[in-house]
Each structure stands twice: as C-alpha cells, then as structure tokens.
Length: 212
Image (tube, rainbow, N blue to C red; front, side, top):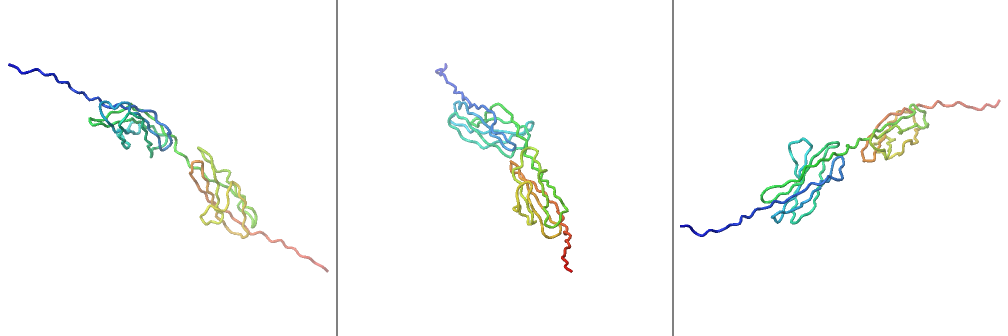
C-alpha cells in the first residue's frame, strides 16, 4: 500500500548577467573600464567589479566591488598601467552562488611621455661685459612641445634669473661662470643642462692727451 502522491516544484535560480563595454579615456598610465549589469536574474543584488591584466598574463587583477540592487551601467578607473601596452579586461558580478563574467575586451595604452632634452650654446669665451650669447633653441621634445625655458644664471640652484630661448646676460668680472637651463614640456616633464661660460679680461685701451 502506498501513500498519497505529491508533486513538488523545483525552484531554479537564474544567475545575474553582465556585459563588458569598450574602455574609454585610455591614456599612458590609466583607463576607464565600462560594463553593465544587464539582469539580476532571481537574485536581489549583485556585487559588480572588473578584472584586468596585460594580454597573455595568467593572473587577473580585481577592482573594488560595488553592490547593485538593480540593472545599471558601471565604470572604474584603473591607474598605474604601463605605456604602449595591451591589456584585456572583463566585467564581473558576484552573487550568492558564484561569479558571472562578461566578454573579454582589450585596449592599448598610449605611449608614455618622453621627457624633453635641454640644450644650449654660448659664445664662450667672451670678454667682460660682453653678452654670453646664450641660445636654447636647440632644445627639443620628441613627442610634444617645450612650454617653458628657465635659466639659473647665478649658480644658486634656482631657475629664476631669466626665461625664453635667448636671454641677454653678461658679467663685468672675468672668470668661469656656471650657467644652467631647465625646460618643461607640455606634459610637465623637465630636463636640465649646465655649461660653463668663460669670461676673459678685456684688454685696456691706452689713451692720453699731450700738450707741448
């Protein structure tokens, strides 16, 4: 003899789903990762985050997690990246039963800024009170432009004595003078260069009047 037959409905859980969107604002050392929580499934919330790594690496780096209680887009800025490097990333969402992932996309960081090169010439040796003939127009920046030229003409370590590519400067006393130039490019990188300028004594001019 058998008891009553009863039917049971098995409740199946549907996991959340996420999609990975293209990275934006990609620079030499940072990028914005973008994704979307497209469905919560049968769960009330999910913790969204990203994973990223250099392409070909075996280890993912996780960003911080944010709890979402409704479908939404989400983004995260990652920094400390290497220039001219391809990275792969994917959106992810934790829920009580596990983790779901979006598709894996890639981006390539911009080339890292190259520092400028400070260079200048002079008319050394010059005579006392003669202009040094300083000229920094030979300075260069391979990936941008030089924004400022600053000079240390009194060898005190401060670049506050003159600006521009061709400053006017002379010394009344003979001797050897240390001249320094600092250039700054459009990304804030700097370079300095120091050269000596020799100032030679000016030969005096003999002159006299004679009245017999």
